[in-house]
Every structure is written in C-alpha cells, then in structure tokens.
Length: 255
Image (cartoon, rainbow, N blue to C red; front, side, top):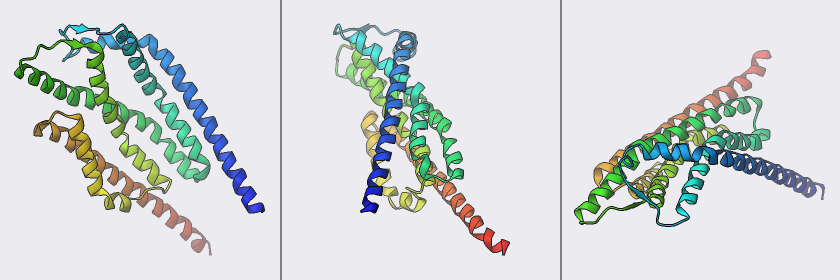
C-alpha cells in the first residue's frame, strides 16, 4: 500500500506545517498584545477626546470595566500590528502549492491587506459608528430616558461595529488571493452575486440604525466593495490565462 502511505505522510507533513504556522501566529499575536497593553491608555484617551465621546461623562459600573477596556484596546492594537505577520504565515502555508510567479504575486497582497483593514476601521469609526450612536441617543431622548453611559457598554457598542466592517474590507484582497491560487473565479462570484448582495444587505441592516438613510450609507459602499472584488478577480483570472497561453505558445515558437 505505498500510495496510501505516501498520502498519509503528505497529510502529516501538512498538519505539522499548519501546527508550526499556528504556533508562530499565536506567539506573534501574544507579543503584540503585550506591547498593546502599553499603548492602550493613550489610545483610549485619544478616542474619548473625539466626538461623540468628547464632553460626555463616562461611568464604570463594575470594577472589571477598566480591565476589560484595557484588554480590548490591547487586543485591537495587537490585531492591527500582527496582521501582516498573520497574512504572511497564511501565504507561507499555501506557498509550496504555488508556482514561482504566483508566490511573488500573492506576496504583494500582504501590505494591501493591512491598508484595507485600516480603511475599514476608518470607515466604521468616522461614518458608521457616529450614525449609529447619534440615532440611539436621539431615540433615548425622544423616549424621555436619562442618558448615563457606562464606558464598558460604550466601547462594546463601538467595537461591535468596527471589527466586522474592518474584516469585510478584506474582501477584495481575499478574493484576489483565492483567484490567484485557483480556488475562486469570476464566474463563481457572478453566479452567487444575488446571494452576496443579500448577505451584505443583512449585515448592513444589522450594524446600522433602523433608518433607510443609514442603511444605504453602509449598503452602497459594501456593494461597491463586492463589485470591486469581482473586477479584481476578473483581472487576475485574465492575467493567469494570458500567462498560460504564452507558456503553451513558447514550445510551438521554438519548433
């Protein structure tokens, strides 16, 4: 049974490689989170000085609130700093299955992945979060409620918006990468376009206030992001086929 033994050895080698990459990712993330603990307080103070938090009195309703806030900021900083390392190890894991040209091309996606994540953070913080907060605040006043904000609840509300949107902004890079390694193609994306639109609309309505203006302000950029991803997939797919055509034509020209 040499074939089965060979497949077993190959599977074990892949599992060992995956384990090694995961250990590197966990170690790097842990170190960046520890470093983030030293930056958590300045970042926290900076955000509290920005609208809508500036001028508001924040309350701690539990002795654990300060620790929870400190750790949330440390985790966010750790994620941002370690993101290039995480993306590198994902690339390194699939690298053996790629051609040399594909290895070089996909390596270039790493810095763009970080840029798109930061763009997602900026979009979520400066557009989506203020809309959601002011809508909730206005509704509280209309219902005659006294607004007394707990810092833990305020930041949980903010992070629950920031992180999902930031991850959604990774969609173009993910689509390009999967197209490059031939796990995705433009035809598949177009086939599931309606489902993708539905999913994006559901996500947008969940994370925004229940008014049509706010919904559209988030839905439209997300749909544009998806269509941009489809366009990038088409470009990568065409480039792949042109390279394959040149390789196939080379022996004929030689003859």
